[in-house]
Amino acid sequence: MGFRGRMRALNTFFLVYTLPAKEDPNLLPQQLLQIRFGPGAAILPKEIKRIHLDFAYNWNNGHLGPRRFWRQCLPRLKYHNPMVSMTVQRTTDQDSKPVMTIYFDGATTKTIDMRMKTDTDILQEFMESTNATEVTPSPEEALELEEVKEQAVKSEEDRRRNKAELLAEREEKRLMERARQMI
Image (spheres, rainbow, N blue to C red):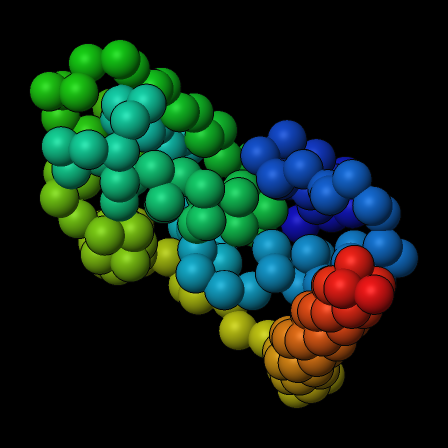
């Protein structure tokens, strides 16, 4: 896949996932790693021409799995397969059947019923139906992924510590205000 194809896929990803209001320079490499690897990061065979998802706006009546597949797996599939057309049609009819249709060369299609299935079940059935090959990170990329995970753990610890300090500071201010009122 060439540079333009990856950029098209990346643009598709950013249409689905938007950057936070504060642009952190360390955030972009993390987002790129998250789209390059994980559930749905797979290379499809050449005979697959199009993928179409059809499910309801709301997640009840068995439409939660398709929604999560669309949000989590489809951007990664599009990143690794920019030439495959991937369309999503969301309906207001909650009773409609959530389906994924895979179009192969010629007139061959394969339909996957997604009702009451999790996103991982849908992905597994999709991978089996298409004979897609999962993308695995190289040793350097695996190291980067580990660093990102360690950074996330460290950030969570920092958030907890800062929150505890802030609550202690507020409590101290509240007690000082009460003491001033008593005098």
